[in-house]
Amino acid sequence: MYIMGLSMLTRGEGFAAIPPVTLDNYERIISPIYLRSLLLSLRLAGLTALFCLLIGYPFAYFMAKARPGARTWILLLLIVPFWTNALIRIYGWKILFSASGPINQLILALGLADRPVKLLYTDFAVLVGMVYAMVPFMVLPVYSAAERLDWSVVEAARDLGASPLKAFFTVVVPMTLPGILAGLVLTFIPSIGLFFLSDLLGGSNTMLWGNMVHNELLKSRDLPFAAALSVVLLALTGLVILLYRRKGGSAETMVF
Image (tube, rainbow, N blue to C red; front, side, top):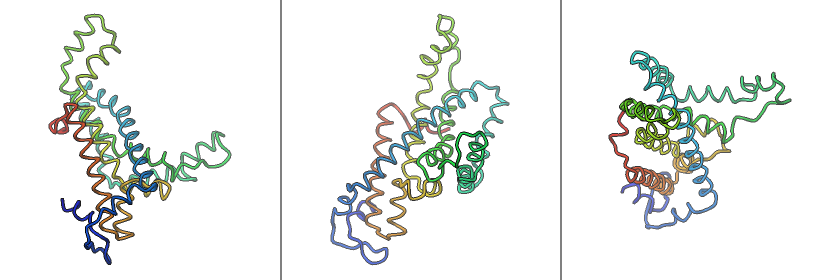
């Protein structure tokens, strides 16, 4: 409520927010530059959730099928890299995507291009970084659901003549759907508000909603407008959680 009230005030000197009460901050949001940023944020967040599912589901399924001793090592392989500072990991991607980085060196060595390909400061680089940062939040809830799976039901489907592929899509996927939905929520929502990642990998070419809030707050020092942008972000978060709950999701599903 405080942020919503703040968003209806007028910008003062410095970080001040003063009367009169106004809706001008919300009117500014519907300008093309902010609408483009919102659509880009939603698109990249949606793609991030999708690719996290495509990468994370097989990983989680394999981990659930592995022997108990092997699960621990697989889980460590997933989590240990994230013990390092997030900025250090993103700087690693920045080096990989740079014009003189290993990826471009390989492209040039294979003769796929006669000059370095622009990878850094693109939406593609931001998307790769977001998927890398978010994929554990897909793997863990899906693994939690798959670990509790009754494999005798899968075997029963096979005994009744279902092919391995049909048994997977008709039995395994529906039974792990709560974990899938939780993973989609846990990867989609944070992706909308990420700003440091798009700053490093996208530069000024990729302005996500989180970048807009960050810039208005710390660079323009427009506290009321930054609050209005934050209210929109909170509203989107609430909408996604509401849709998740309507699909049968619960807070317990997100507990790994």
